[in-house]
Image (cartoon, rainbow, N blue to C red; front, side, top):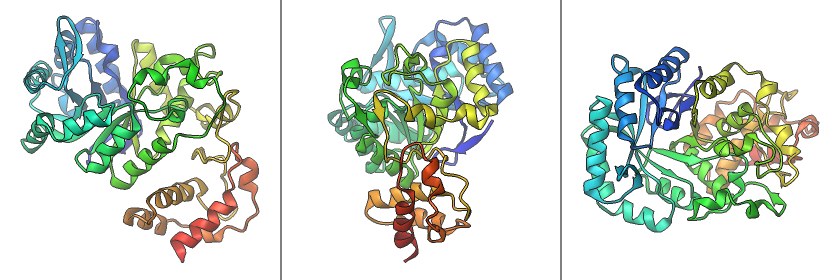
Length: 382
């Protein structure tokens, strides 16, 4: 299992994480079997958005004696009421649900405290300046949450939260179809077939800005909906008009800037094992570029996807990484200090490009790589 630092938190998380859907409506023994498999395979990050009390209790029992081996991403503002899940901003409900979560999990802290489901700018502004944020910061100061996060499907709301400087972790819905969709306060628009009827071109610029801003600020991203609720794995259901494999979906998510871990919604042990096998999958099995380039309804022409097909460069330039640094700097209108340092540490710089354009011949997305190298050299080496 490969591990990544979650932004600037200092927390190391496994690339493959576990969404809590797999624990819901399971007997305690079944939950323990999931946790046993996770421990054996090195899956250490668990998302806990679901407030189901039986699930919380079963997981708490399964974690006994090995709590320190796992990173818990617990959610504030998610409560169990009248036998079902509910999102809330009522402070008493938020406090009660969080305390219940700690008690049932048999722990006195969580690594990530996630403000749950902020999908509009109005909601973010209420959270930011209201009692929920005050309570979350109190928990952080007391050490009951180690880092503060927020979950969202809306790049506008997520970007506002990231730019506020108040969160260190973002849980965001990321996959090759959702990344085309403009911001909306209605999460159902991500699934709406009508939005995919026209020919779609390239990533939504606000989503691109969000990934790059997270990378620049050191805000770590944990990914939800990497498989689009399973739709991307089925050619008949996929909004793109073609299916991807689980490995391709995972690799796409893990190659977005700032992404540290993908919370896989494994409802069965075999689902979890499939996601874990990503770690031993070949580069060919992981390679999403040919599939994306062939999608009948979507085009990424001219847009670098950081897929690595440009390699190898005869001069040894890491073309995809240089392009990522270039995009980060151009998006800011200046060169962030960390980006400058990382570029300076590269063994081979963009100025070494001899414009042979072998990389462009291999690029599935017709990116003008030689031009990018010229811009990078002017920006970073002038």
